[in-house]
Length: 156
Figure 1 (cartoon, rainbow, N blue to C red):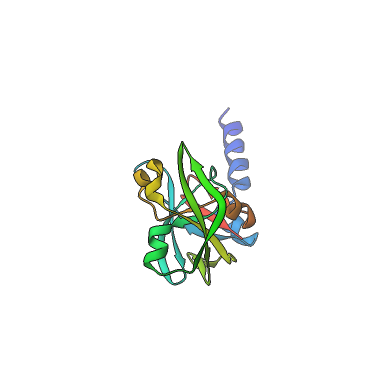
Figure 2 (figure 1 turned 90 degrees about the vertical axis):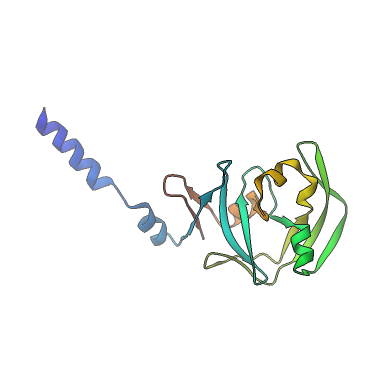
């Protein structure tokens, strides 16, 4: 019985692959994630040379920043006519913000434009205290893989 258990453990150890090494060899770059008080994943970004704490969301399609912060940094933005964002019964006008540089860690995103909404219009977003949201479309475009156990986001 001990020999069988030893063989099973040995086979498991041989087949175990370090996730970081496997993802790196597949062309991915790792970005550290942290969790806020509500268990949402947060990561550090840099947009047009300004730092942002952004939440990773699979529930929201587009990437957004807070319009108040966008205005504070004097980002070029344009109101998108007849398009509002609705979330849990709250609503806000949507703006398109011109992006010259979008960095997540050392990874350069190829976004030319992101959305901006007034986060104070949304009870949920005010509670989270984030400055932006990395949406599902960004994650899909960069073939994102989330390592929950290691608190990392892998992007191509």
